[in-house]
Image (cartoon, rainbow over the protein chains, first blue to last red):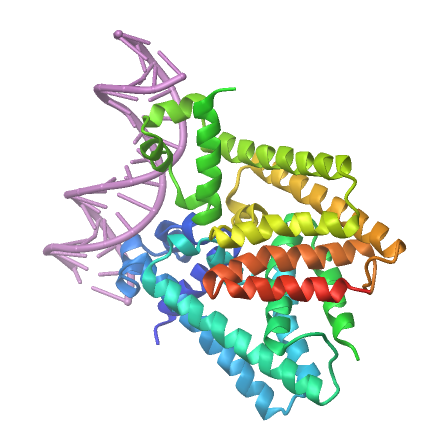
Length: 186
Length: 186
DNA sequence: GTCTATATCCGGATAGAC
DNA sequence: GTCTATCCGGATATAGAC
């Protein structure tokens, strides 16, 4: 694993979350890292390769988080809170969620990037549905309707919550976050 | 009011909602309308003028909707449903909400476009808060917490609901929509 | 693995004719 | 109000040297 490659992935992701996929260039990355344009192309021949790799990276980190929570035997509340923590951190750093960022530019993405984004979104919805379901069965959560619909609602709140809060006032995300928690309490 | 100008505004908005602000060019517009690049620049000298004007247009349409609802004396449920209808229509047309589209690319927008977007978002949140508040006082709605937090939550659901539904499955937006309604029922 | 150099193309924008 | 023509800069991408 090359360090430069890691740095490119990290910076590329930051640019997507802060400015958007179509608003950054390889020059933005190379100048920031003190390398040349061509060096970035060495690792990621085309921009779509970089985009797709960034999503793959996010999938890996998501899976690591799940492993970690399984190891530590988090209950469903704990798992949900751990997930929310990512969003709270993003909010602090003026970053939005990658699902919302790339989702907004979806029609302009390459086919491989689209597929990877769909894969990641599907994984998150599936996981969220499952813990909402298990948690309700245990009496930890209370909500109306089926688990998948509730997962979609909660994920939507988080995704656009970051977008709106960055636009208006960061404390708005706190408000949304608290409402989500309160709504789930039995 | 020039017809060409109207067409540019309309098409520009469609491109923002379908592909994203940074993913369309003046060429996209001129070729589609059968005119030349320079003609678009005649109406909107710089792209940021077009972006800002599109938001101003959206604000006007929002105000018209409010007037219309006042004239017809819609109650709070009726007003909320009319608002939701816009989103259901967008979902059908593979468009997302302009707040989410431009919000995702916020950091890359010009200052005037940013300001206009903030203005529009503020107006919507304020209006939504007020009908949620009035409706609850009348016993039409039921929800936990203050009206503004609830408005932020609902708006977030709608905004990212469209993003996620376009990405995954259009019927996902239906599910979110129904959950929102059910949650508000007394 | 990173560089220089370059090719190619595209996007935003303007000047001036009609 | 729309056109032709053009400029400039920037973005993606590649070839080949080191």
